[in-house]
Image (cartoon, rainbow, N blue to C red; front, side, top):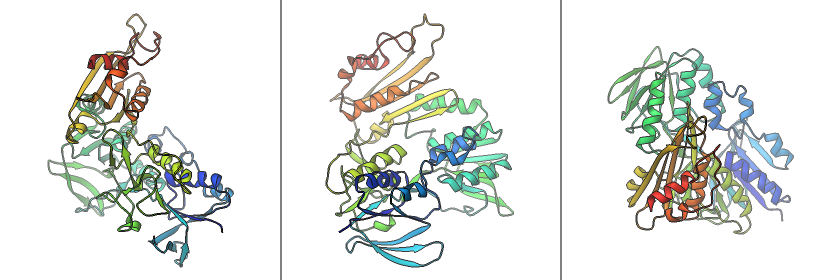
Length: 444
């Protein structure tokens, strides 16, 4: 009997799972249901496309329905799954092209439905020129509308918001960035880092409105004109919402274990609480190593890893997920910034007892023709001295040091161990005591 695998959602996680399953189980019958007419769009490239760095949006796709068909996968584009019965192992599907409904059965179900931007319910939200930023269609809409917009407001100062703000400023727009936290990139960086990043945006004439909650929008002739917050009003003829994402998991509500926000809880083999039902990517919670808890961290890196692991573990538990540190990076004008694990703010909020070491130094010897300043912060538990987070910022690209510290966190290393790890020295690149060694030594 041929194994029937159904995949709902051809997201990053879905695409990774499908490609790997087609390779591992050539005999299986794999059917993919996707409600859009395109797949595998790298939304992290939208700001680059808006800013003209990536000229051709088509290059931001890395897989096509045709490629999946060549692997022997049945790809049903523009098909919406209306209901899933995990006990009977049945799906109810509607074709968006014809409106026809039909049922399908499965032996294994892979839920990779991803996430959708959070849309606040407030007065004026339905006005024209208030747009989302997630998929290919959104990217085209933003570019079209930005052509005729002079004042653009971006709501949400996470990675996507910041990258868009920079892209719009470079297009010569008047830009306002609004966020309800006291500072930008609150989740990723501590204050001494966000202060520098914020100043870089202000120096370019960007208006920063942090610590303000949007309460409504007012319009003229059906189009947005002002963004109203609890602290002021901002003129805008285009508003981009980047408030964050919530998992798309309505289909399995009440059938598998979830976090309060609807993120599906999977074990280290990507299995949900119900047998033969797997999930990966933005629809899931992941094991977050710094705290040892499940957390919702929608990143493309987590998604492709988890998707690939679904395939490996489909028949029997084979390869464990090592968890995540939520490692990420961003370039803001001249600054190269990266972070991994918990910030000091985040660790304290999680009730942990932490200390930190912050090093501000020139990244290489002063006898070299040039040397830039680097700021590195490492956060660690006071008692166990286990490393739980790190951040780096410099005009030189030292972001790879954060990948190194991500490995340290994943492996449960302490500051004492970090002090004496073997790192190379070469005056072109660094100092005799590597920056990471220095952080460890300073903690001792």
